[in-house]
Structure formats: structure tokens, C-alpha cells
Length: 248
Image (cartoon, rainbow, N blue to C red; front, side, top):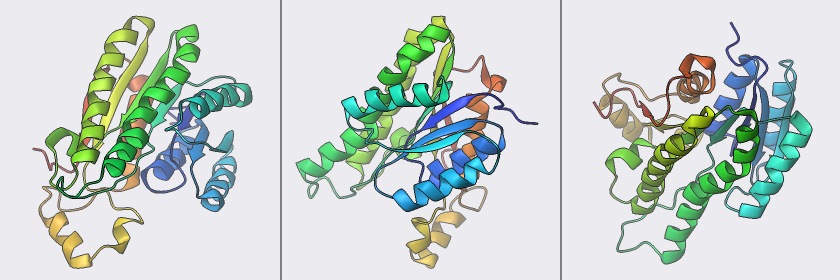
């Protein structure tokens, strides 16, 4: 059963990792997928080809979600190419980890700009399209670090906690127009980035998780399918922890 048949999704930062997993699972559920990348052009075009082979409309766009103007231009272009945007997934994000005493102002600002301001930029850009048709689902990729904090990640935690507050406020503002806004807070998700870490350290993390494993991009993507589909038409302003029980 294809839960997203006929819907158009716009996903930021989808050339690898969680974003790529969401794009693949969305296309398998029948969604047309517009997605952005910042620098990895070859993997982005490869993914575009892969999604098109699934029989849906798909297109990769080079765009910086941290730029207000680029976000506006992107949505205009996507609406022109796809006709509409039904689902926005704000997934673009970076880390610049360091202890507070060592973190530079530049590293703090950059993480807030890419992770949090991008959510403002993109949500504002799609708002008009969704208001016009009086429907839409906005999904913001937060993190359990935004829920509970983490030493060495003050900038990242602040950006991800900010996304949760932003989502709840948007849910309150746009609920009467049938536009929903929710956050997903992934825990330890195994991607190509974590594949480069020390296996012993990673196993230690797995052992500390109640389900005894790291999550996969598909685990997060399936939660996005729920929040993007008509299965969740009465769910808004929520934060869904996809963390194997870490915060239990």
C-alpha cells in the first residue's frame, strides 16, 4: 500500500544519510520527491536517477537552506516543476562539536544558521503554497540532543531544541488552515558518517540502547511517512522520539 501516492515532498539535505533514506522510502510510497544538496552533486544526481526509476517525479536542487533568498527561489522553482508542495521535511543540518569554553562564535553561529534559521527560511517559503490549498505537513528533523542536551554540543542542542519550539508555534498558528507541523527526534542513527567511528565505541552506544541497536535511516523515514501521510491527520505540534528507547 502506497501511503504517499500523489503527494509531493520537498526534503532539504537529502544527498546522503537520513535525508537520502527519507527520499528513498518516500518514493517507494509513491511520493514525488524534490530534494536539495549543498555540495555533493554526484551522489545527489545518482539519487535523482534512482528515484526516477521508481516511477515517481524526482529532482535534485543545489540550494543553501540557510539562505533566506535561496529558500524562496527554491520553493518557487519546485512549485513550477512539481505543481505544489504537500510535505516539507527540514532535514539539512551540520555539527561543529566542542566544549563551550573552546567553541568559537563562528562555529556557534554557523550551526544555528544551518540547523535552525533554515527551518524558518523554508517554512516561510512553503507557507503560501500550503495556505492556498489549506493543507500541508511540515516535519522538522530535530534530535534527542535537542530534548535532553549533550556535553560538547551546546550549539547543536540549542539549534535542535529551537526547532521543537518553532514547530509547536507553527502548529498553533497554522492548525486552523489544516497545516500540521511536527518534529522527529532521532537517537543514534547509523549512517556512513558513524561507519567511520571506532567499532568498539559504537558497540558501547548500541549496548546502552534498550533495543540494543542503532537506528537506520529507514527507521526515521518510516516515522516521516506516518507524519507526512493521512494516517496522522490529527497529529500536530508533537515531537516523536525515534531513539530505540534511549529517552525512556
